[in-house]
Every structure is written in structure tokens, then in C-alpha cells.
Length: 130
Length: 384
Image (cartoon, rainbow over all chains, first blue to last red; front, side, top):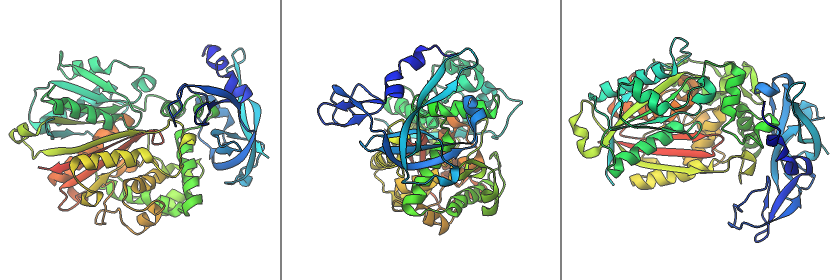
């Protein structure tokens, strides 16, 4: 069982949708990082992600890795948010047949998984149709 | 820098090798390579392996393999770059010989994947993705390539049938490769009716779970004439990286690391892509081969599906791709794949490829990649 620190240290990104905005070139880094991949700057200001965006691509996972085995099939996708950030998450509250490239989605805070009856319950963001 | 040649290649039959352990799988292919070269002396060993820790619970392969090959105290180094571990191992072995640090280097690649369940294997392979921002959300490798396929179909109109044709072609070639895991022909209908793994990819779009190894022996080109078989020169080597997360790529439909690695390898060899007679590329999924064709410049971006349909990449076509059967039919023991690609090119350039021989081939190229293209390594080979 992983230690809670593995989940706790990601709380700013996963619970509060926090990204970093490069103070020199304005690049938005999600998840936050130490070095700007565009200009090499090492200073970032906090930036809260836009919560709406468009689905760029998607699939339905039918063969899942161990910890998601009971959840399959489930949809996942990559969306570009209104502020330009692209990220990957599950797409929920949407029939598989309604998934399409370009559909409007919103980021929502959701439960991700439970590590057994006594382990850490982990949370994060998922896409829902907007 | 010294010119480097391959003087021996070895690959034992791939498949679900339940009766053989990781060390046995590796040593069998390594011995075949040494016998092929007709020598027993080694200065160094480099091994490509993605995840022996997750697949069989064994690390420290450097000691294990030198020991079981009967070569202690010859030094060994393990190289990991996900599914491009083998190709990157070859590049490291090339560096050792080119630099003059070693004369005879054995480069091996190996993966023993069937000691775990399918779900555990899916997890182990998934560690090549961004675990915290892809794996955390339940993404798998088929899912990541499926998302690339959906994007490619949407942007360029690539069809489901065109992807199936990649699998059909590679199985046609693989049916002539006795060492392949699945040396059988399949039909487009069989692909389209096989079980869905991650829409639109079906099981027959995916490379299989495989146990296997491959090995090559390198030496300075000036020494290469002393051994049993016609040597093949490693004329160019290029490697490049890209973002670990697919979502961070500029274009979901392009594998830029392959384009950069190929440009470097071809420049080093002083060749253009049109000069190459055959290609062994990383068709971990059918869509991957289409995207790699475009990244290498075998066709314009977006034209890969159509080019497959028109037969560009068949044996006998302008650019034969994966005469060995590719990862799809030959199998994909991840760490072994990059080395096995070199084994196939050497056999082709020696004229030893039997029924799948590309006639008159004297120059070949290998392209091996990790993850969704987060790493790519390309080598150019020429008959001497």
C-alpha cells in the first residue's frame, strides 16, 4: 500500500487545479514544474486552470490495469481547456455513444479510487459534458 | 570515433516461454549471437530491458547475465528506455566500440512478460507513461495509442480498415518468419471482428505479450573482416526525446522524436530516406506504424493510411516496412524489440532472410520508440 504522501503532495494540482504560469513567457505548466519547457525560466506564478474546454480525443478503456479492473469499461480523453492547457482524465456522466472530438467538457472534482477498506481514498478531476 | 560493425546476430524463438526463465531466455539468444560471430571473447555487455523488476521481480541484470553467460568478470550495463530499451542499448554499445573503450561488445535485449497476469502486465507496461498524470486516471498503452488513432482519423480521415491492413501485412511477413510468436496470416475481417481493447483498437491491432530476447555482437569495422559472417556497418545512430505525457505534445498525430532521431541517424550515415531499402519500425499498435511512416518521411503527414492501402510498405513495395513481421506478428518482448530489429536488418543485408527476403537490400533502418514516442532511437545499417 503506498504511503499517503504520494497522494497528499499532489493535492494542489488534483484538488485545486493549480498550474504554474511562467513569469517570463507566460507558458502555463500543468502539472507545475521547476523549469519552463519553452523559455527555461525558473519562476512561476500560481494559476488556476480554466474549468471548461473541448475534447481533443478520447477512447474507451476495456482492458484496464489492476487497480481499475472493476471499473472497466470507462472513457478517457485529452481536453484543451479555455486557457490552452491540455490534460488527460476520465470522461464521465456521458454515454459512450455521445463521445465526440470537439465536444464541450467541464473539469469536476471527483473520487478516483479507494485503496481497500482501510487505505487512502484518492481524488482528482474528471471531465463531464458541459 | 571508430566505425562500428555488427559481426554476429542471435535470436531464439519468441512466444509464451513458460518453461524458460528470464536468464535462460537471455543467454540462449546471446550464445546464438556469439556462435554466429564465431568468437567467445567479450569486453563488455549492454542489456536493454524495460521492467524485469515488475515482470519477474529481478533487478541487477548486469551481474546475472554476465554470470549465467559464463563471462564474469566482464562488465555489463543495463539500459532502460521503456519499449526503446533495446535500441538505446544498441546505441550505448555502439558508443563503447566507437570510443575505443571496448572492442567486442555484446548488446542484448530481453523481456520475460508471461510470469504475471494480463492485468499486471498492462500495469507494468503502463509505467512507461506519465504515472501521476496518465496512469493515475486509468490510462493504459492501448488507450493512449487509441487516442492517437482517434485524433489521426479525425484530422486526416485515416480509416479503420487501413489500420487493419497494417496488421494483415505484418502477419503476411511474419508468417515467413519461423522465430515469430504468431507466424500466421490474418484477414482484415479478423482484425475488425476481434475484441475491443480501447476503441477503436482491437486485440489484433495490438502487439502481443511476449517472452524473448535478441543479441548482436559489435566490433570496430576495421576488425570485422576476421569473423565468420559478412559484417554490417552501423552507419548512423540517432536518438531523441519528447514529453512523457501525450497531452503535452504539440500534435497528437505526429511522433516528433522519431523525426528528429531519424534526421540525426541519416545525417550521420550521409544518406537520405530514399536511399534505404527496408525498415524495421515500432508497430506496437497498427496506428503506430502509420504514424512512424509519416514521421520518417516515407509519405507526407496524414497519408500513412492510404500508403498502406496502396502497398507502399509491402515486401516488393517502394519502402518495405517490417519484413520480419514487426512487433505485431513477431512479438514484442519490450526490451528485446530494438535489438531484434537490428537482427532482422542484418539478416536481410546478408541475404539470410529466406522467404521474406527483400531482394538486393544493402541498406536498412530501424526505428524503436518508448511510450507514446517520449523516446525514439533510429539506426542506419549498411552492408560492407
